[in-house]
Structure formats: structure tokens, C-alpha cells
Length: 238
Image (cartoon, rainbow, N blue to C red):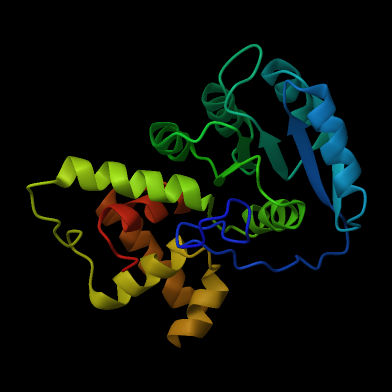
């Protein structure tokens, strides 16, 4: 795992599968962060990328919820710590009102428990603000494509936490998963899309989706982020 934050490794396996989404219209991004200077800097950064556009930037979760219906963003980039409510509660409210929107938490809070809470609330990614500009742009594109983005520092902390809790016990294989399904969830944790997993494992995309439904059901995972965390917990990346 690359030890340098923002070095290019963004997924739980310490790398980003970075691909630009080739679409006819720019990817619409809503930025919600309590620091005006940071929002201005990110807006300027994304201005250099024609396939991305910040439809608005606001300082509170309340303003962000108001903009969801008006601006129709595809991705919301927000913080864990907001002036009015927590970013996790903001994420829950987004899920309740606009479940199709992908939420990327871009934060200074390097906390494994917060990562778990974010995954439970439905975050598509959790990355730290020391990330490089290029990898931030790739992360925004990636979550829109259905990938899971976890900063390597957080992935490492989570592994250490899980290993500490499991000390003295046995790590067992997740119940009900066959080898092909373990291969699929491992690739989910790497940040690959269903199509890329299908190509890599020589399966049809429909077969991958079918296996994923079973995996989520067996493990109690509600989304790809939770599946990626479970892959970490059960050492499926090794």
C-alpha cells in the first residue's frame, strides 16, 4: 500500500482505477462545505475539466438539501463536519430525498468509526483532503460510475481496528459465499465497475449483477461501500 496520502491510491486496496466518464453532458456536482475558501478553490480546480461542472457550492447541509431539487446534481461532495448538522446526518437525508445521488465525503477526519458510519449511511466514498487534485477529480468521476472510493489511510486504520477486535479469535469466511462470489466482492473492494469485473472474471455483466445481489443479501450489505468494508473485515483482499 502506498504510504503517501493522495499518491494515487484511493481504494481500499490502495489504488484508484481511474477512468474518465465519457458523456455528452458534464457531470453535475454540488459542493457542500463550511469553508468558503475551499469551495472556491475546488470550483476553480474543476473549471479545467470540461466533463465536470459545479452546479452550486453552499456552506450548510440545509442549503445543500434545498439545492438538490433545484440543481439536480449527480454527485454531492461534502464534509463530515458541517456548520449545522453532521455530514453523516446530511448523507442520511440525501438518501431519503434523492437516493439516486452519489455522495463523496471529502474530509480532514481520518477516523475508521466515521468511515463505518458513512458506509452505513450510504456514502459512495470517503477520502481525505490531502488527496491530489488529479485523484480528487478521478474520485468524483468514479463514484458516479458506481465505484467505491476509500482513502488508503482510512483503509489501513480500519484494518488495524478490525484486527484488534478480532485478536484471539478466528477470522472465518463470510457465510454462504462461493469462490466466484469472493472474487467478485474482492474486485468491488478494488473499485471496479460491474462491467470491468465481468471482463476480468470472464463473466457476463448480468451474471455479475446477479451474484452481487446474492452477496449483498448474504452479508447484509446495502451498497458497494459496505461490501468493500466487509471484504476488508474478512481479509478478502489478501
